[in-house]
Image 1 (cartoon, rainbow, N blue to C red):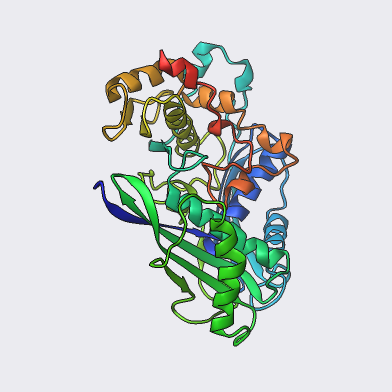
Image 2 (cartoon, rainbow, N blue to C red):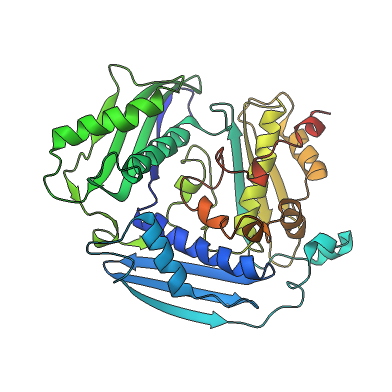
Length: 396
């Protein structure tokens, strides 16, 4: 990446069809794990006008009413009337139950080291984690800002401040960098759906969103819009209704929104809709945890951690670190320290973060909360992979 550049990142509200699918898929994961923490579950969702299709494979002692879970999420997001609503939409399912694997039914909290070593991954994955000093959450500034604007856009609708908005929305923030440091806001774009055509008029919508969304968000930021910042509100024209009535959705299609806003790499694998024994999901959390601790330790202002896993093995076949020339020690030394301070084995990750029991511990709502506004860098949630508990040990 060059020293001077502009990078844009997008976020979407909970009512965006792709994110609606992610939330339904993760709510299904939550429900299975809440009642049976040793469940295996993979759930994917597709949505279009009036139709929700859910494909799920599971091995569990839990009994889950999957259509009921989907309708509940659709209603909570705000689709209660119109062309697509929680009550009248058609929900189709393709469900497959497969036998319980005795190995997966074991409690990893009681595993010996040999048992964790025998707990191997069942899918190939290369997971990436990243951290930098650009924000308090150690996240890249563009995605941090895009999420904040998207959350605010959803809040002003839900709090009934702007009652003409519907749940679907998208935000984009462009940041200009000089010497790899954020210097100014290049552009801001908001795509906000409206319940009715012609209400409000475009100029009123622009004024309302600048006053109620953009200005409050950036009032708390060190880098703010200036006279040259370009602000776009519905640049392609009025978006009436929005959501599944206008464009289809699919689980796992917003990988950059879930992670680092394309400032750094992600694996391309969907994170939502997978139980914690899927290494492509939990490996991303482990890599983020490691990268964040490197930055928190002051060993580099930017750090990317790459973990590569092979089917049939418990630990990554490769651990790589990239600090983009910013590290106080060389990247190979950092990788060596990570391998000795962190347990990157599947069973070790699940045990360290208690990933199979978090839904039950948090009143049945955990993974669904991750499905919108990012699965990493969340300061509003107490996520175990956001801890910097290993920073001191990495310095020596």
